[in-house]
Structures are given as C-alpha cells and as structure tokens.
Length: 166
Image (cartoon, rainbow, N blue to C red; front, side):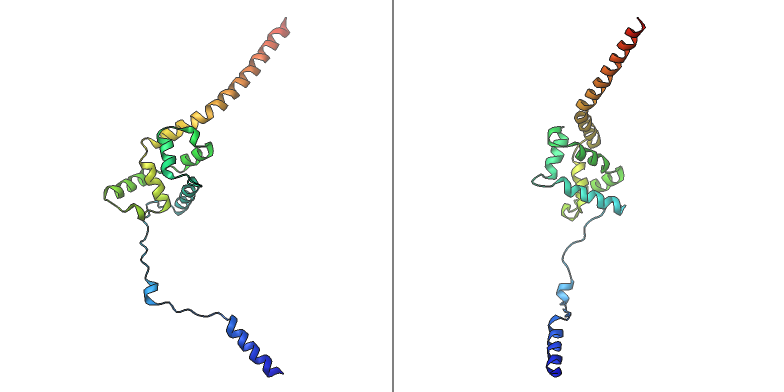
C-alpha cells in the first residue's frame, strides 16, 4: 500500500515541480535598442512618462493635444490637464538636449515616453506661455463670477452701513 503512494508522490512531484528552462544563446541577445534618456532625475522622468501616457488616453494623440495648445483651443483640453502640463514642462536643459538630439538626426523611435513627450512640446512655439494663457482663459469666467459675487456683497454691506447712520 505505501509503495503505491510513494510512486504517486514521485509522479506528482515530477508533474508539479519547477522545471528549469535553458535559454538558447540566440534568445539571450536582444535586438531591442536601448532608449535615449535625457532626463537625469528618475522620479521626474517616471512621473513625466506616466503623465504622457495618460495624456493620450482613448483615441487622443499627443499631436492632437499639442495642436490644441498651439492654436489655443481650450475647449479640447481640461483644467487638470493644463495644470499637469504646466507641472511637467521641461526645463531649458532638457529642451536643449532633445533639440540637439533631433538636429544630429537622432532616431525619434529610440526616445523614451518622457523624452518623446518633450520632443512634442519642443514643436510648440512659446509652449509655457500658451499653457498659461489657456489656463487663464479657462479660469476667467469662474474668477470673474467670484469677484462679482464678492463685489455685490461689499456693495450691499456698504449700502447697509450708509443707511444705518440715517
């Protein structure tokens, strides 16, 4: 009886044990080129890459977003997106490095997601000023409504004070 169990356990052990897979030498060599990295801060690079991928959720493309910024079409963007675009604006060193890479006929397909995002931003003239203008345009209506409300309260209060003295 125990001999039959012993054979069953060896069969189970052979069936479910981890098997080592030997990789061929050709499989160890990858043809994938390494991506070009121009952002030195890894945390910033990762956050910028995440934002760049969220920017293109759905059917929207980075080119479409940059075209909306270039042509100041606020209706195609939302406020949180513009705030993030402000936050993840490249600094002058990052911009210069990407432009230098492009001018030296560097392969754009080798750029990582964050660097590719910067590549698209570089194509928009006065990018930061345009994003700021779009944010101002989006917030203008709400800010003027808030100021009008506060002004109405101030006027009502001053009328009340003026009339209470008489």
